[in-house]
Amino acid sequence: MTRHLAAALEARLATHVVTDPWPGYEFPGLRIEVAVDRLVGASGGGVELAGQYVLLDPQSGRITGADRFAITVPSQGEGFPGLMAGEARAIEALADRLADRITRRGARPVS
Image 1 (cartoon, rainbow, N blue to C red):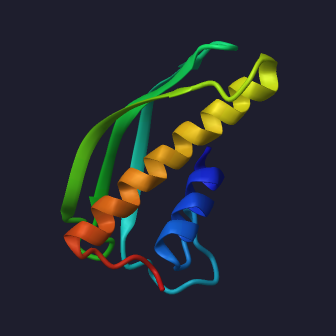
Image 2 (cartoon, helix red, strand yellow):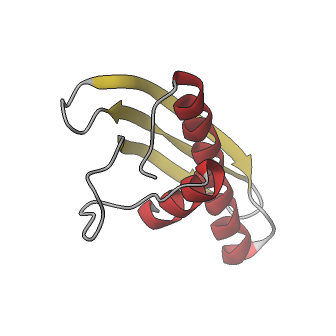
């Protein structure tokens, strides 16, 4: 999940997004912490992803943004592949929200 979210954010923000630890990179310009409270789904039904994210200035540790999220998407077909595709879509929907929040607040991700 973490790597999928990082890749989705990288695509949306057009910048490098790395997971902790970040070897070989300058200190990040923004730290995102995501806590997932719920990730459930059923084949042929919906997928629910819920939790909270916090945006932090990595040098000061100051919180620059935080919010809870609850995302529901339909599964993307029948059986296990459809369920996994639905979970991937839910993570991408979270990436959409995070990217919007980051660009709206003027936070600077790693570049």
